[in-house]
Image (cartoon, one colour):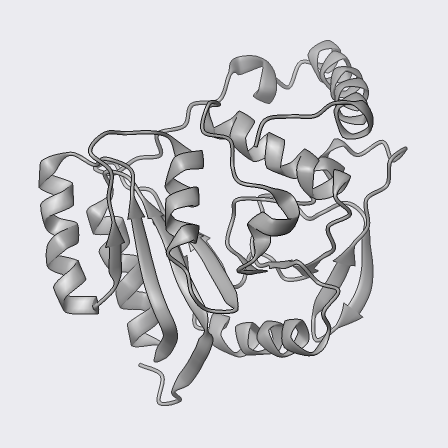
Length: 261
């Protein structure tokens, strides 16, 4: 266990949860074990089954967080919206329940807070991704500025915003709008990516992006998202068609389309 206390009074830890109470417990325990103390913790539940909600209510007494519930599943957008509405601090650390912070997290998160509190241009700082953001400009303390390259051929450029763990200003909605509550989770995130670019969002990306969080899904609490085959196919023809389609769609949506949310 860490012997250093890390206190972040201006930060609320916002966790979205759905039917993975053991994963939530693991996440909360990891922050406690690393002596990370936040100004507040908000757990936003998306209509979990009774056995999971009962378990979350027991965790609420143990970890003293705000539990925000809904009587039925309303999707990712609603879950983030109602959770963010409960945040009262200047900054929000957004983490989904299936992530676990590593022992390296706290010191680098401290750097991120210092950067954001002294340099007002940053809207968010990202700590995790499946792949590195493709267009980066070195900044400071192991972080790089994300640069949106309209004509760049790497389609991951659109993921200027991501639902993966990140720090953001808590007035995020004022600039980038609320999350859509009419789309599935992938399209909800896509709409926010487009909005973030359209509204000139600025963000940093942690260079060692696999070192601060680990995403863990067990067989008893698996990921609920299933990819469509065409998105992951290694067929060269499908890859070519997929990349051309994405380039055209991304540039059209960013420059001409108003998406919900």
